[in-house]
Amino acid sequence: MPQVIEWENPKPEEIVWRYPNEEISWGSQLIVHEYEVAVFFRDGKAYDVFGPGRHTITTLNLPLLTGILSRIAGFGEKPFKATVVFVSTRVFQGKYGTRAQTTELAPLQVHGTFWFKVENPQLFVMEVIGGQNAYTTEDVNNYLRGFINEKLIDELSRYDLLTVFTRLDETSIAVKNAILDYFRRIGLELVDLKFEGIDTTPEYRERLFWLRTGRATPEQVLRMETVKEAAKELGKSPGAALGAGMVLIPQVMTPSGPAQAPAAPLIICPKCNAHIPATSKYCPQCGTKLPESPAQMKKCPKCGASVPATAKFCPECGNKLE
Image (cartoon, rainbow, N blue to C red; front, top):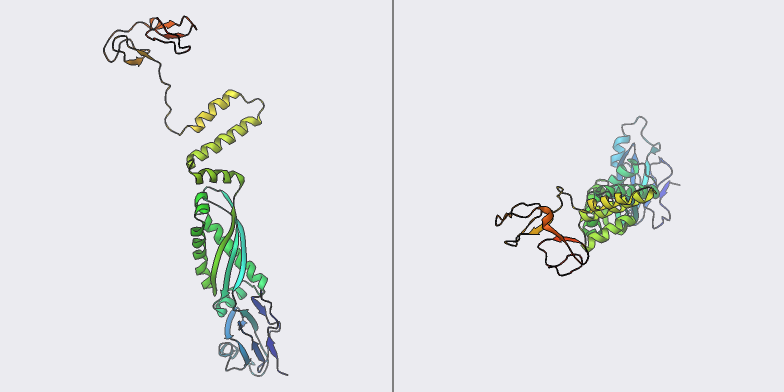
């Protein structure tokens, strides 16, 4: 009976299968079913490829491998050594999922689905089956999933948090394009790739809310988060002074820039009614000599508050002055 080389009862999810016997006899019957190809592999290289049908293994239909074997001493009627790898040409579905981060180091958790098929079986067997020693469907899936996760991490690190969540379609297209070329180089066609879930931590979800609603700029969000962290740290210490928090928080919430001196109190010139600094000796508007500082103030007869001498009403209690 001639040797029969056949992939019997393959499961729908199986991508590859290796014929267990590497001793191949001339005259063997190779049976390749629909949506399958058989690739002869030896010494790290893929040689002859057979499509669907029943094939008798001879030197005529195995020209590439025969050329290599003919250089081996003793080549003739004896069985030769080769690995026969069956490859399914159907479209397969795979899953991916990984952790990544954005440009501002926001942690991301992403997962989704990709669809692919073997476009060039000879290249696929050489680069993945032989190159990665992935002789089973599980090995192939693990390799492809790991590669896609690696590309996702690299691509998502180019975007900020707001872009990832508000322009997810564009991001997925960019990731797909980054993977397309590589898949072609290993004999695969990437049919499609989709994001099915993406999330971040509660802290960054809150930041995303403020950014998406347009209620705050990235700088303002960062200042708010800094205030929260500062307040949290102050609260950890039972001896922390309230005054420290009172000083720190306004400094954090105020946009950065040169420090400004507090505004000087103003008085009204008795001649031209111009508003001038209370420390002035002469009015800068009309040149009138102003009374000395003590004379510039008087007390409200109702509440006792010190008020400018020219005031008509007390700024504390509203009492009408003489």
